[in-house]
Amino acid sequence: MPAYLFVDRLPDAAGTRHHGCMPLDANAALIVIDMQQGFADPAWGRRNNPDCEANVAALLDAWVGSDRPVVLVRHDSVGEASPLNPDNPGNALLDFVAAAPHQLFVTKQVNSAFFGEPDLSEWLSALDIEQIVVCGIQTNMCVETTARMGGNLGFEVFVPIDATHTFDLEGPNGARLSADELAAATAVNLHGGEFATVLSTAELLERV
Image (tube, rainbow, N blue to C red):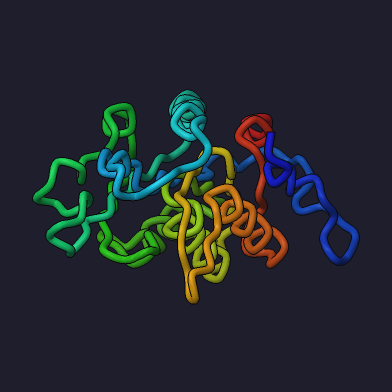
């Protein structure tokens, strides 16, 4: 199992652990990001973490079973050729996600679910929700951006990193990182930067 799944067990710079193992609030919200059929398109390239879907399903079952709020998020790409464009079948959520009971459905055209419709932050605040759990696709894109913004807005954010996945990516001057390397970087950025507590799905479910 990749070492980055255990970031939550590492002390921060002050020598303390993030949030210990306290149970999650009774109204902690699960935010499921962009679990859409279009990400199966081979054009995305090589992905990591084949357990992502099963872990997201386990989280949904736990949230529904504990009567905690669930938020589903869908990316409506403006690019006509994108598999995630609303006119393409890939825009649809995966069947098990679409069928999940939920309290809010957010659509967005950018990376952060906090810049979607309806207003996620406003909805969470209206219900006095202080803790959010962010999972889904892609780890280093919309999951990380939503988690960072959630932390900046003052929410206590948890990211079960093995309930996310991403794809290999090429950057400037031919530099290329694998999906696992990108996921590890996201885990370190979020947890080390104190935007979120990063942990595994199993560790998170111990708190539900």
